[in-house]
Length: 339
Ligand SMILES: C[S@@+](CC[C@H](N)C(=O)[O-])C[C@H]1O[C@@H](n2cnc3c(N)ncnc32)[C@H](O)[C@@H]1O
Image (cartoon, rainbow, N blue to C red; front, side, top):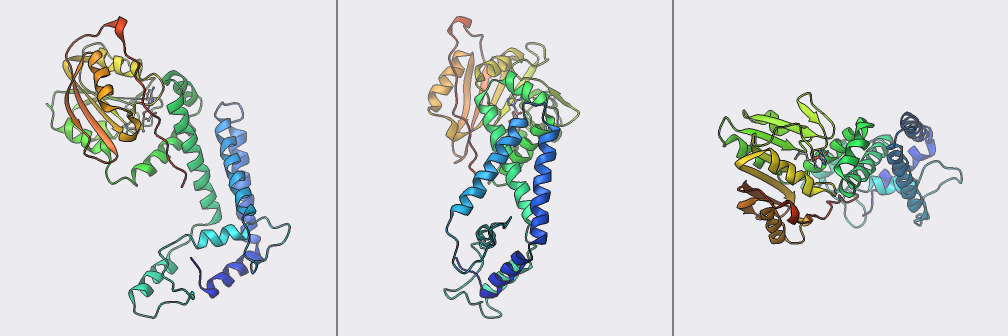
């Protein structure tokens, strides 16, 4: 994946100049410092520290890589030239031939190159900020899957900023998916009776409530919108037997999934519906998951596994359950890969 000679030398010139690069690095350091200071008293300080560690590790790995001979760096350079070259050569779509020569004018390849050249490159600071946010998102996501809902509630209660970071990261993932499972749930609710009462467990930014005419109670650990009730969804402030549709869209996180499902059972009317959309890779055995839900008094109405990424369940509350025979319900965590 080579680059045109002109481009490389212009990059090196920029690096020699170094002052703007140094500004970027200083800004980044300042940003991390502010971040750390503001959160010193909070548990989530660890989040920032972990992100910094990730960043330092990344820097170390990059410096370990062999530098091409023709790229000069000074001993004290704050900046990793090898990394800059990698960053600039990241775009695999840049059309080049083996010699690195530019394509002839008027060809499709030349058009593609034009688009690339005219694209405003992201500054180093922006890229670093993105990486920091992405590392924080992955860390928080891991926390949500590896602890109880009660613990997650405590964590975010003291640190709403982290919750926003988590949700920005989640939305950025959603934007890469071919479709959003929430859209399907929205469609389902729209087609239900207009008098249906809905409870959205783990509503995120409460898009469901904003997209349907039915009455929706939206619950999440932190209220991103005024009509969201902040709580641990193992205990929602609704009376028993008052809800027609309970929704869990990608929200069966935490180690106590059973508590959430029992809470949905409590608030549902008899014959009320339970809708679950989850990432398919979280299931070791879908049939066994359904059998466990049946032990909780639900019957399966519909299961859709046609999507490559998600699975949808539509269940109906049919009976009470035997409190002495509760099944253990676990799902694999959903881990987002570092990009
Ligand atoms: C992956 S997001 C999905 C958000 C939304 N349902 C959607 O599809 O856009 C999962 C949401 O569940 C929430 N959540 C996880 N455990 C929770 C709990 N114990 N109580 C309340 N909300 C919880 C998270 O805070 C997060 O906002």
